[in-house]
Length: 393
Image (cartoon, rainbow, N blue to C red; front, top):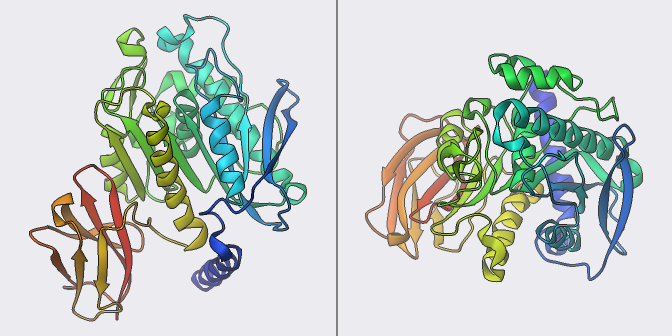
């Protein structure tokens, strides 16, 4: 009975999303103007967020994107240009978006030692959870879908949101004494920043130059993520390392390290590495536009296609056929040299087959796999990925 209910719910979500996505909503900027409204989301700590809503929009069940700014947890504000630009762009595509303030430490040395840094970060996580709960609690008046709250951020804001999205409960961090004690001191798992009632569980994650303290906190069933990062980044390491160019004791792992964990536990993701880009390479307008497009396409696939994985970030796949198939799937590529391998994923995101690419026409066999929905994923040399849904009958 539970499986039947889950299927009905999934189908209902699919058809609702299809109706919402007419006229390229959530992909194109179909609204010309946006209204910003400032609300107090945490009376406990006097914290506000700016909510951006597309003007003249009549949709009442929209996904919402909550973003957090950078600033090493000691500076920055919700008016940061990167976040404001993203909020406006995505609101014009039909989302409701929000840029949140969170508690910052007044001591510029706070982030240099673990015992002072982790309590600061945990306070920010508590604020992020309160902001998520505020949006859910006010979903009717805001015209949003409380089941589709997407979170993300830039630099420190991405660090905040990664921990919000992927720490599932207190048990998961119990062995990390500093994090565990900081959570307990700040109201427990959900925090003490207010809006008790709704959970802080989210729908998807957007990581622009972020990192996580422990990659094992990514676990099967967690939400999908898009991550964008410069690989020589010293402020927030692309791999595992110390933040702030090594001047801090605080160690984290960026997508250069955590992507392998995502693969191993079956979390769907899109990644883009910027060689030589250093911290926040989207300071260049053309790079910002590309990062915006990658993020847009990633979210569109979940909002509008009920995808268990993600759409291509390019048009190099010319055809996937036959689809549905009985024996094997053929993939015709426009630029075979751009790819390194092809993978077959089941509906949970688990890789069930993989082979290298040696030409413009690639076949992947069904082999012993049962009938059902799968995904063909092609891995590119530049670390982006292209994915197509396929069916084996």
